[in-house]
Every structure is written in structure tokens, then in C-alpha cells.
Length: 189
Image (tube, rainbow, N blue to C red; front, side, top):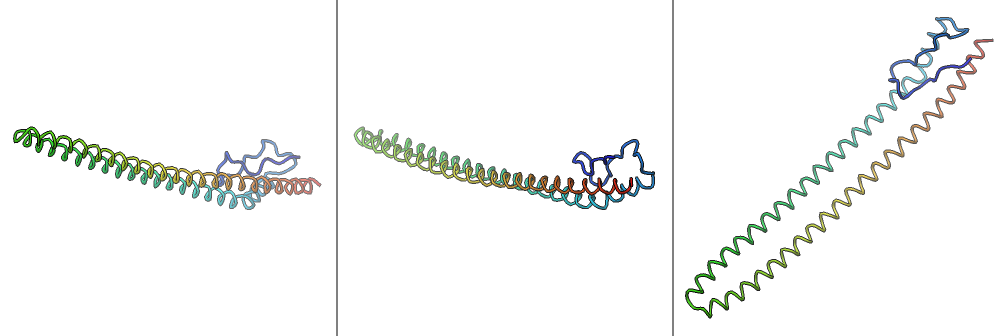
């Protein structure tokens, strides 16, 4: 006589496994007792495992939310920095154009000289702006990679823990199935 599987991931931990339609030599009272024994043996373990898995899932969702929030804040900071630099460059360009116009009306020579210096200054500003932009992008890349690696490590640890728990549960279920088999044989005798 074989017993039904004691624990199933498809069934909630609080509900006993369905009994076969015909229990063979067991009476209804014995069948009820067997179900109570199953609940006593496996109910707490199944609920504990389910709670731990829910806690891990909650922690993963929280970590993912924090990661996304931090990434969004970092993007916002970068965008604000770019906007600020762009505004400063635009203001400086506007100021230079006005100065150039005034100088050209005074003398063409001074205007030409000033124009040449302005072009050099714009090139330096552009070079510095590009350097700053590259530095910010490099730091953003490094932070993104570090956060990605941390989340990958967390997910890997979570998967390993889940696999370890499943293996332990299978081993416990196998041992209990053997014990129930022996119990069944003794009850049949």
C-alpha cells in the first residue's frame, strides 16, 4: 500500500494533501489520524519554509526598489549637472557675443583680437565641459556596474539558498515517506 505525497509545492501548507479515493485497509478514523500526523509533521515546516521564502522575496523587492530609486536619483543629478553646465555655457556665450559686438563697433582690430580670444576660450570651455561630462559618465558607469554586481550576487545567493532548502525538504520528505511506509506496513500487520 502506498501513501500519497506528504508535501506538495502546489498545495498551501495549511491544507492537508488530498487522500486517495480508496484508502484500502485504513478506516475513516485511521485516515483522519494519518492526516493529523501529516499536519503535525509537515505543517509547521511547510509554513516556516513558505514564510522564509516570502521574507526573501520581500527583501529582493525592497532591494530592487532601492536600486531603482538610487539609479533614478543618480540620473537626476547627472541631468541637473548637464542642464546647469549648458545654461552656464549659454550665458557665457551670450555675454561674449555682446562684448564682441561692442568691441567691433569701437575698432575692427580690437574686435578681431577679441574674437580670436573668445574662440580659444570657447574651445577650452568645451574641452572642460567634455572632460567633466566624460568623468561623470564614467562614474555613473562604475556605480551602475557596482550596483548590478551587488544585485547579481544577491540573486545568486537567493537562488543557492532556495535550492539548498528544496534539497533539504526533499530529503525530509523522502525520510518521512519511508517512515509512513513502515507505519503503513505495521498498520496492515
